[in-house]
Every structure is written in structure tokens, then in C-alpha cells.
Length: 208
Image (tube, rainbow, N blue to C red; front, side):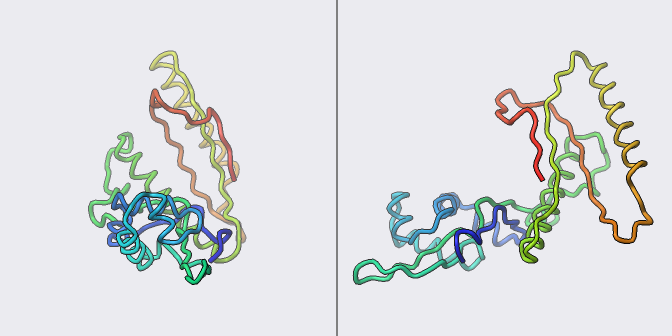
């Protein structure tokens, strides 16, 4: 594996893999291994005992979270160079088994619980599709829009929501084509919530 082969995001669906990854020391090691390094190098950077780092690396490698990159000669020794398999990781609701967020089990579609469950499903879907696209050597087509809207009153917030729903319904009616043999179905999730006071996200972003 080379640095260029490293995934941007890797989905963790297995409960045991999630348990291995979420230990604080191992999270530090995964962060340190965004760039290739040896166990001794990681131990020096993190100020941890080399033997302890070696143990954690073996467990991470068993679970497919760290991979061997190369063997590098240093003097009379040969260092084993490893790297995290991804720069970032997402834990799927599936890793939590029956207590994982499930949109189908939430009855109130206007609740924050439903929104969290839907967004969790979106994370899982995109991560799975990203892995399939990577394996096929293709780019996954996506579109992301994000913006902040400051409403002057609850009435304007309600009016905005109604106009947005009508606009989306009109676009769906215009572009959705069940009869398209070579068509491709996209899933759109539109979610709104109060912006945290400490939010530093960009006002508007678009990516694909």
C-alpha cells in the first residue's frame, strides 16, 4: 500500500473493529499514522512505550485499520513501515447492532431522533458506495450543499420550510423518470437544525 492508495474515509461496520479502534491510545496512533511511519517512530512522537505501541499496532492491523507499506533499512536494522488505511473513519450504526440508529424505527419524522437516524444512514450509504467506487477505480458522483439561514421569526421559518418543500416537489416532478432504462437513482436528504453558536463551517459549500 502506498500513501496514494490510502482511503479518504473508511466505514467501520463490525462491532469488534469499532471496539478496537475507539480506544483512546489507538485513536492517537491512527491519527499519527495518516502518514507512513514505523512503530518506533510513532512511539517517539506520542511519547508512549514502544512495546505498548507495537501491541496496539498488531490489533489495529488485524482489524484492517492499519496496513504494512514497506520495509525500510535503517543502519543494520530493517524497520516495518505501516500506515492507517484511511485518513478518517466513520462508525456505522450497524456496529451498534440493535441499538444503532434506525430511521425506520423512529415514528416521529419531525423529531431530532429521526434526523439523526437518517443522517447516520446517509453516512453509511456514502461510505459503502465510496468503497465500491474506489475498488472499481471510479469516482463517486455526489453533490453537497450547505448554507446558513437566519430567520427573523418562527413565521418566516415556517414559510421557508413550505417554499422549500414545494420547490423540491416541483424539481422531483420535473426530473424523476421511472421509465429511464439507463437512469440512475439518487437519494437526497434535506435537513435543517439550529446552528451551534461555535460553528466555524463555511456559509456555503458545494462538492461533487
